[in-house]
Length: 174
Ligand code: SF4
Image (cartoon, rainbow, N blue to C red; front, side, top):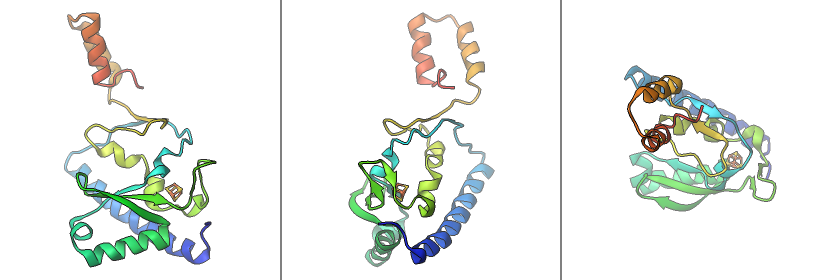
């Protein structure tokens, strides 16, 4: 159901909090010398990222029942995210989004969607090897792909070896 004025206001406050938190975290990672992959492509409106929104949570939410309860209540009543399952490996919670219309592949509250929906797929670009959802039009580009392609061309390799390296290093994706 489309967000009313109260939910829109609550989500606006949460959005600012999200932006500050994420901004600080990424600034810290940059200060440590980490860099995100450059982003290529564009949104194809596949809606794949709305199929099963997943939130990696900290230790407090993961292991303290009362904190988790509060977190889940916020997700359900404010964001419209209903818990489907836990992903123990990634310490993440997987949800069903009640705003997502599977028939039209659209969000009924796009203007007030949470920060994580607005941020996607930036979050993937900080992973060692970003994997995009099937049907997603975005992709991670290899920095200086053209220079690396030239360097590979200078090496004494068979066409198969060169192809394998180009694919492994994602050199054809810019
Ligand atoms: S709130 Fe909207 S953008 Fe976010 S997961 Fe749900 S349907 Fe998608």
